[in-house]
Length: 307
Ligand code: ATP
Image (tube, rainbow, N blue to C red):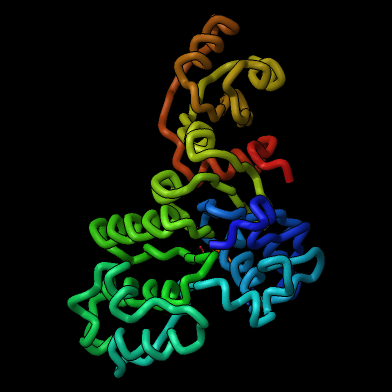
């Protein structure tokens, strides 16, 4: 890939707002994908991931802020030519074979892979001549991935690429994605699986209700999301509980305190030390969805991104 401008982002959203009618899908999002980086945009359903991708591909226009692809308007052909995308809505005619599709797609690019190279990159050598309509779900997804790769893009955009795939197919796609990063490509991947972001990403950007609520290494995000929910009957003031190290969020429901934390042992010990009358202590695991909600209620300072 081109190494002359080492740190300029390949794709960026700056203060982007996007509304659909009175629904705000993105409420001021900053995002940058730099050379050689795999960024996972992680968030639950409806968070705004696909909207962010569509803005970067020039399929939507921001209501405020800017979207740039290779420092240009994303709808410019020069920008689009350096990007390959696997979208949730990607569809190709079922009565052509992957090899035929690849030949056609290759004709749009100045220096494409051969169909055989693209098929090999996704482990689909033995399905190149089968009709697309006769491929399994996982094979179709790999064929679409090959189409995204055929132009030797500098940036790959993968929108929830493993939804609906079984574990084996998902892992195969992860391997192939990693191989692309090792070959020097940048990748923007959207996912609602923390596991997927963890397996692949250099940097994870967590989006919720159209806002970036956290970002950092997978390790950092996992520590935020590896939450436990502690419930207990206690009169401790919320401010006292918030001050305990490791507490992500606190809520009171009558006499019941509800706390989210990645460090249940330490927080429980501190609670017991602060309130000898504490009763009905209960610790359960808080899922990722709940961790997202906690992050939204109590935003964590973005980490690891100077922008
Ligand atoms: P999912 O994981 O379900 O694909 P997402 O994170 O990609 O979700 P978006 O598809 O970006 O979320 O949607 C963000 C919000 O904007 C949602 O509330 C969605 O209903 C709304 N939205 C998206 N596209 C449109 C549209 N064309 N018209 C109206 N509302 C839309």
